[in-house]
Image 1: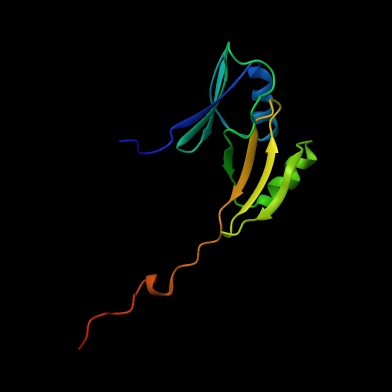
Image 2: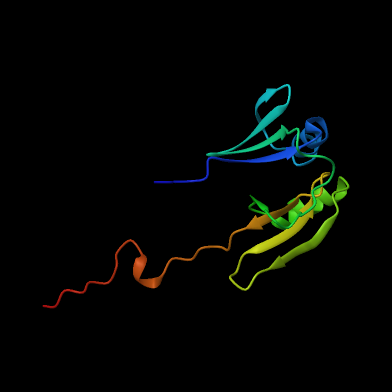
Length: 136
């Protein structure tokens, strides 16, 4: 059975353009580089950029697939990327479920999101010494 997402590949007609954006602007660490393919290391997942003969120019349907990039301080990351010229479609906003989302696009028009998970607070009955249910 499928256990996880191992990676996501964004196909392009210019690996150099997207490599410069993902590594140079977003500061994603490079896992490996080949002439027409770059893999970025995001923990247990690889975000890849690769040359594909059937891809030309900007994406025709940028909302079809959206890559969420996890961050711990969305406001700091948003400010740093905006200072580097990244144009945001949506500034950081708190979602109804408690997390924060900010949306932008890469040079090919692929839509990406910064995603900050909500702070987790333990349930009152999940502490180190849960209340006893035993009766005396």
